[in-house]
Length: 402
Image (cartoon, rainbow, N blue to C red; front, side):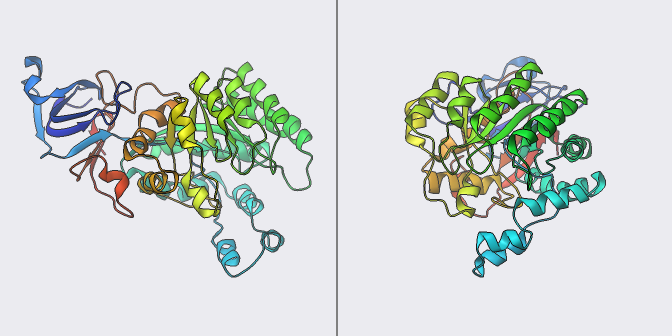
């Protein structure tokens, strides 16, 4: 347990649910108790007398936000796909890349071949890169095993990361990520994916259940079978949907009360209305949009109209989004998708927390965890403005500088 203290002389972006913008408090103070929770926040002149005896840290006018949350990543995996990136830029077709062993098949093979020690060692530098940008929570998916043991192995490694680093990890079981080579999709769902989910749940490795509902992956009926088991096990759901086409995944996820639907470039007005009715978060992933040279952007205006909470994440993975910067994702969400800087910051704080079902972080308010980021900027809009710039001064994780 650490000593209680007060951060003073700050500009605080509370990112409160009730805020129409950043929830800014100028000349503010934040009281952090010995348990690592926020005890009070407000104008420094209003600081209650009960905190007068606490140690004070002058942050010299810096902006303080909730620590950032990357709510969609695939950072546990074997190998990389830099070679196929180079092949494509030298004119190779998708078929030629696949024949050379590229694509998701190469990542599945590398992940199956790697042991837990190797997977952990390769994942930790990615985690460190996110921590260095003020991130306190990372969601990590399985999905590069496509067999029972490798799916479990990936989730075990994800759990170990939180033991190795000052970071909070949320895990998503993504057994329904891709159809193994020469496999039948329905047989795979019934004989591999669902048994792997039950085994992962029994081992305490799963926080959420995800799937990829797309023409190149699984249809709505197949995903629904996985979601039925998730509900039986009491696990919340998420879904990759409407990335490349619209086959009804968003509406399906909304019917199941999903925490989030991710990608959603091809979502339409009906999808936006469905998400608005259930409060499901739309997670926007500009890194994949950029890498795949997509042209259809998510319907941000429709999401706004329907009151759909929007989150932003890196989708850090070895193929379609090898992007290790959540700050860059915020900038890209603004430049490519026309989100506002305030929406981008909400998308990496309170709405990202909501996309993971977390209620104790993502905002600066009494009772929340003291997961904070102190920035060398004069206004929070600068966080989405810079390209390749990291203005982090200090990250606080559950009250401790880390």
